[in-house]
Amino acid sequence: MKRILIVPILLVLLVGCVTTGPGGKKSLILIPTKTEVELGKEVVREVESTERVLTNTHVQNYVSTVGRKVARVCDRKDVTYTFKVLDSDEINAFACPGGFIYIYKGLMKKMDNEAQLAAVLAHEVGHIVARHSVKRLQAIYGYSIVMEVALGDKMGKTARQMVDAATGVILLGYGRENEYEADDYGILYAKKANYNPRGMVQVFQKFKEMEGRPPGTFEKLLMSHPPAGDRINNGNEEISKVGGTNLPYYESEYAAIKTLLE
Ligand SMILES: [Zn+2]
Image (tube, rainbow, N blue to C red):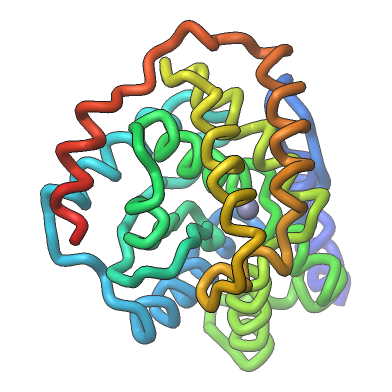
């Protein structure tokens, strides 16, 4: 009888407080990394059953290389980060639980240097580091169900529902507070990876220009993210703290890749 109770408690002690941000920031995380990665793989299956992955391997390798540079300097090392370009003109990027990151071709076409790409990918890495999807699942499902899924080794009905919830959260965004957090981490990681962190603010400036128009593909991004003007202000403030405004943007490298995106 007792053993059943002891196992979850031990697991909480083991996985409990983990680093979820720069400066050794800690949060209470109940879902172990292994479970998060399994959930992530299910979400990936959902994503890749509806979206087409870009077939150009040169572009994919380039994005992976940039992504790995920012992942290397981030505060979470217990997952493998993967970066893929989706072949659609949607202007968006997102992170699945467990380190699986996607960017749409449409967003890449809007950008004009590698520092901007690095900033977007670093923002997504920030969501993984902060475990935003996991925190959201913990909040939705609560302790007991999360533990049940974490302890079970089969993808049962509850786990299935969590995958659906995780997919929903990803597609709708994580909410404003989490977006600002990911922006801040992204700026820091981009700078640490030797990119000019102003790339992040440049991307928001592009979003701001698009806000005025009535777009189809851009609406989703606007719903869940803070207004671009506020993100610009927050970003500039963060950049003044972390520095790095003398670092390069890598314009010609990016221009060469952009010609392959049509
Ligand atoms: Zn985000």
